[in-house]
Image (cartoon, rainbow, N blue to C red):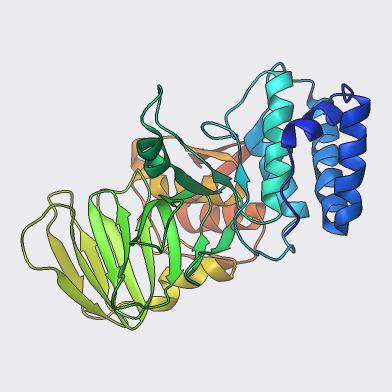
Length: 345
């Protein structure tokens, strides 16, 4: 991974506002590692793409996806802390958009880590304890990160992982929004726990998937190898122990149900570039395709949206996926930019 750098210098450089001191600092940074040049070129390329749209506000989500696509072969080697508040993905004015875009370009080479601090001026120790790192997988992208303890995580599109900046020293707790695959380095003294929408999955020497997107009614956990202890956050009942090949579901009440046999491939296919829509309604499948391909998919008609879909795709482009769904459901689709509309024939 390239060495840390003041991204504001890159921002001023992209804006044509760099000072002589900025130019010297940038030249020295580029000379230290050839990968730094790749990052800068990615930021320039994305800026040119956005300029052609001539938008009043920059769509940084789209820029992020483009940069990540250019840098997808870069190897993950750690976390880059970026000195910003909040997510750099929010759309902004052209000036702040360049800041976010430069941040996104740097981050796309590995993962995104944003330091969050308490508001106001708390005691220094309290502020230090509140710092959180956030790893983001943008729409139409996946992000892979190796945590400090050696645990490897793959985040599916539209997902976020948060954890304390002192992760691994006292505990190993992470918070997940979305979907993640966890290959955990087991440690009896410091169990690894995933907190997701009122559920807690704790490893017992494990590889497992947690799916907890906001539109889901319940949280799904599927064990690929080893075992997972699963329970509702704050629930006093004994946790359920899931073995390899089992699927656990945590309801909003905290109740856990366990499926003895799970189709593990169905739950992990996304990590290999696949799209699995088995058993979903077309309405839910539209959300899945929107995250995967970076588009907005609308289904017209409640009856069509409730139709069940059973389909699996691997590295298929979006038009082929939509064509297959249309044939199976007797529907047709139209596209206007990044908006897809599916209607009954």
